[in-house]
Amino acid sequence: MALLLLFLSVLLCFDAAVAGSSRSPATELFVLGDSTVSCAASILPLNLTAPSLPAGPCLFPSARRLLPDHLAAKMGLPAPPHISTLNGTAAAAARGVNFGGQYGDRGMFRMGAVGQQLRLAAETLQLLQLEAGTPQDASAAAAGAVFVLSFGTDAYARLLARGSAEADAAAPKHGRRGLGRLLADRIARAVSELYEADVRRVAVMGVAPLGCAPRVMWEGTRALDGGRGGCVEEANELIQGYNARLAERLDDLRPELPGAAVVFCDVYRGMMEILSNPGRYGLEETREACCGLGPFKATVGCLSKEMACGAAAAARHVWWDLYSPTEAVDALVANWSWGRSPADSASGSGATMSSICSPISLQQLAAAEAPPADSSSTDISTRS
Image (cartoon, rainbow, N blue to C red):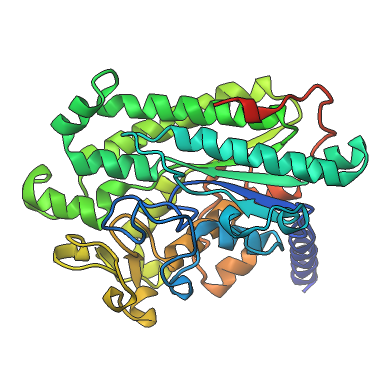
């Protein structure tokens, strides 16, 4: 009996500590990225939004929340509004902004989108700092911000859609395997530029296993994978190479950024756990998209609400469209990015593994008291 009482006492103390640590001091969430974070970005003309359309809301926003929406909820913040919906005032951006999108960049790899979004972020931070009043208030505002960067999915989707020969011809200096090096180096430089703008908390998301996405598997049945219709390993190897390069660059960068917390989240690992054990998380369909037409629902992408499966069916799908996961999967990835909790395990919500982020979880990142910003910061708006 004494041992049982001792165990219950320890358990109650642990639960209280977890509850206390979940109270996040993060005050703003800023998001940069591609279609993984914003419907204002598109992968291909066949996907949710034609590239010629201006940035705006999802085609039917009630159908799915994206990863930043889930992360914001965990931080106790509202979902960050897209930059295109704001009125240009500091009050509108006070709790965070989603800068995700392409902004007219039409290159093969569209590296320019990173610099364009950084410039928008710099202008927003400057606006908030001007409204802060004192330099100390401005530094405190920057220290309370968490930045999430999620690039690479759209670039690899375009790359895989072209095939190896065409992709290498389109980028003769770099080729398909050179994309990982280029993009990882650009993201690492973006983290450094944010640091120079007094940002001290940054999370960088990796790329999911697109070799298992409906569009790539459909292409694989025709050419790449011998007609078996499974995950295209060549595609996944390219993405694993990029993720490894990105994690390595961030590891190298951390010692150069004293006082900063820079986190890498291995989305690939989380998605492969889901694809390998879908039933464990209440999912059934791992190959076919919820919204689209043709084999794998991937020959024509999601163009209208009528093309989508119902809400109940969507909750059982891994993939929403050609390359994008469903809201159910984004919620799981957000859970694992935030960090495993005993409550999640007890409720069967899918938190069966530790955080996919390193060296700390996003919960720890959001809760960390960032040190005072360096007074020698420089403006990132002049960088590309």
